[in-house]
Image 1: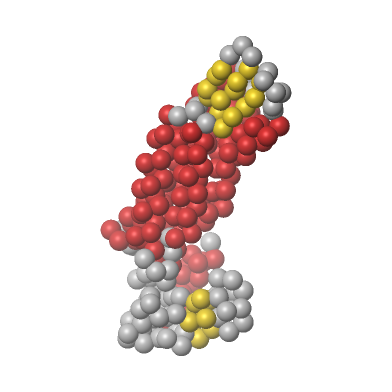
Image 2: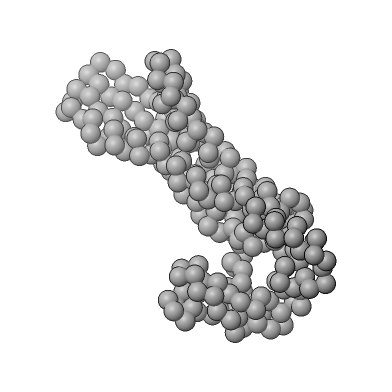
Length: 231
């Protein structure tokens, strides 16, 4: 939102990148009125509608489903002699004890560290935009870009189990089956992706004076603002 309360004068297209004048700019500007990009037809909005509410809904659902994702088996191996069920933490521990330290670290990062990091960071971002909007804006923006970049690597376990289930099948002698924990884990990954997509990073900068509107600032303040934006 601009300083005059009329909304931003320009809108950027998330699809093709074209910057267009905000034709709906006015005191009655709201999320229900939309404008389309003149080049690709994509909907242009100054803010994502109900961004914080949708982010919280996905984050809470992901946190709840993360419990069965770790408690229930993600993979079941069936052979002529035995049947074994493997959870996420159990599989990581087995890889470590078997000497596959590098692989166990990769699976731990993708299956445990990244989902927990995404849930915690998204909860922090959704909380601070309402409770502490001026707190470390640049650092929060960098955190959002980080989880946006690494989020899809959480699907590593899902890919591995699906590939094993498709390739390892020797009739009645041995087979690999996906367990119920894998569905919960896949749901956690999808929900964190949806939460990342629902969150509007522009909310982080609400209330921050724009450089273009800072004609009254002195030269030193302008230089500092430019350096901060380019960092």
